[in-house]
Length: 115
Length: 113
Image (cartoon, each protein chain N blue to C red):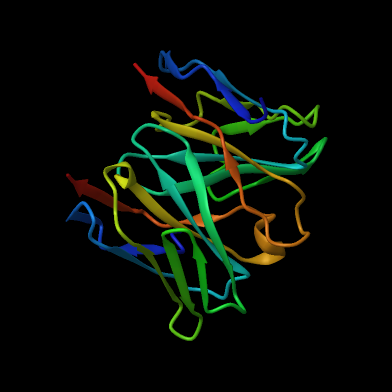
């Protein structure tokens, strides 16, 4: 059963704590992406990675960090430096960056609430 | 910044009618994609249209692209209750979207039975 999984589905954290959101894919895709969605809004790009051990900042990277040690995994850490972290976080992947026209496949999302 | 802007923000129609959503964008694009999101879920890719294409069909979906006006439209024909969702356009600039997509705020479509 191929796809992208994100865990947990719901996450609560106290102000000042770091938290890591998981994203795993078994589609053998090279590129992975993290987006943030606020209520009634579109998605905004946080970080992306086109190859293992390499990643790039998106439009709203401040207060976030990522790693890409394995092709299948692209975890996102929301740090205490992120001023307004409560949001819906979506992970996506695409097959091969820069070749052709690539659609993105999305995970089910993690809803993070800061108490 | 938001590259795409969908219009209308919300649309409510009767089952069986056609639904049309529009998207405008600001800069040159490589391709434009439409996605659907059911409430509280991830996005599902619907259709991709390249910058050198003008129209594309997929089942009940028809997408048009006018690069001179920097706009696209998504038509859903013979709507069904299951089409109720938010629809987003997303634009890809360099390298076909390898650097990530830029999304609009979406159109919330409600199909009334």
